[in-house]
Amino acid sequence: MKLFLDTANLAEIRTMWEIGILDGVTTNPSLVAKEGRVFEDVLKEICALGVPSVSAEVVATEKEGMLKEGRYLAALHPSIYVKCPMTSAGLAATKVLAAEGIRVNMTLVFSANQALLAAKVGATYVSPFIGRLDDHGEDGMALIRDIVQIYRNYHFATQVLAASIRHPVHVLDAAKAGADIATLPYGVMEKLVTHPLTDIGLARFLKDWEKVPKSVRVSPSDR
Image (cartoon, rainbow, N blue to C red; front, top):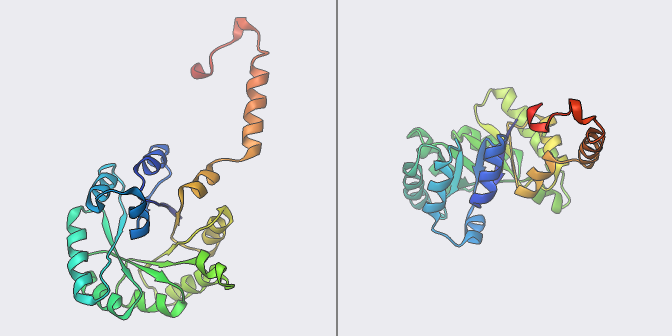
């Protein structure tokens, strides 16, 4: 499963990119607004790092506006994927953009029927929001399982991108359910890296290392 970072913060993206675990980035108007910077500048800097998939969302609500924005965003860099909302206008715009070779990430998906429609119009990614469903008393992960099954039944090429991830268990469950991608906040991705027993074990190893006789001792960097 690919791991995307759900942020527009360059420092966060750079950190995970340099570690080597990052496959892409998703942004949205809310995330960009937090940075207080020009949208296009942020996108270009993310792409300049070498990130192969960067989702940028349109803000128009009608078809022609989405098409205009989508074409503009896609032209900024080859790594850009255009995010369109799951609405009638979004579906119509996605159909046109996909036919033009522009890759679309259909966002704000909350049902398997919506995901089915996204695949039918040629979306590259579909983004079901599992955390928000959980917030409303629904089973967000059940939606991931339903979409994966439907796509496999009919051999759709659309990839399932689990979004609105709230904690590491969401990531694990999405991977077990067969999601192609999970997009995570920076704090959740940090938690995937760390574990208290790892820290305890490392501290114990280093303490024991101090007991090694100096005559045979080498620095950790020489090992």
